[in-house]
Length: 151
Length: 103
Image (cartoon, rainbow over all chains, first blue to last red; front, side):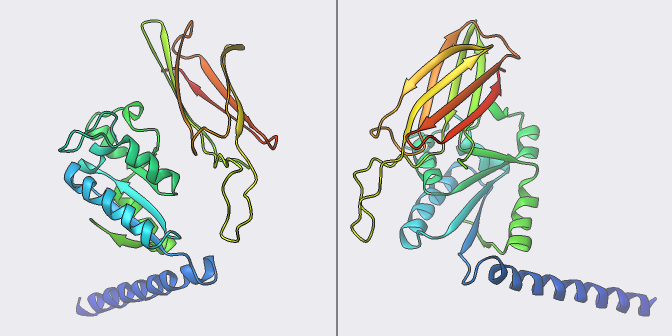
């Protein structure tokens, strides 16, 4: 019993090690010095989205070369629905379009759309749908060497 | 090759609403790069939308149109399930065609 447990933990540790090695290798193998890649997780509604818009703008001002992907799920997709407004009554269309033009990608969780019965047609044009938000956040970090930020 | 456009078409009361988001740098030919050299003009010149083989929209774009242009127009005569096909051609002769099914 105990031996089985030890073997299991050893196996897990080995998986952890290979994972770390893979993550450490990917940035250098994709492009020499490696462009900084960041994934922003948005899952908390309009207030978080307003903060994120400012963060994203500042991020690109300070480091224009950064590749940024925004993954939205749960209440975090609210700002990407057409007609969404912040507390001051401004819509998100213009800031989202501006960020998209400077290379930011907006990915929306399909599970959330299903669960909240929001049609893909009601999303802003810049939003792209991915099968699952959490999977996307994990995949970007694990397989593509993205740094993680949650504003 | 040029990036794909996003095309969305919805029918409501006999009127089809088409939204198009094109991906294009739309260089005006007025800007200069870091070395002071002029960046040559490179922008979309014509946009054509067709539905069931009929032209429903035709536009001529110039350097004054913004980067990644967004276009929204309505037309009558389309039904749910029909396809709307959009094509742009830029001043270098590059082309991009995408389509959407009316929902």
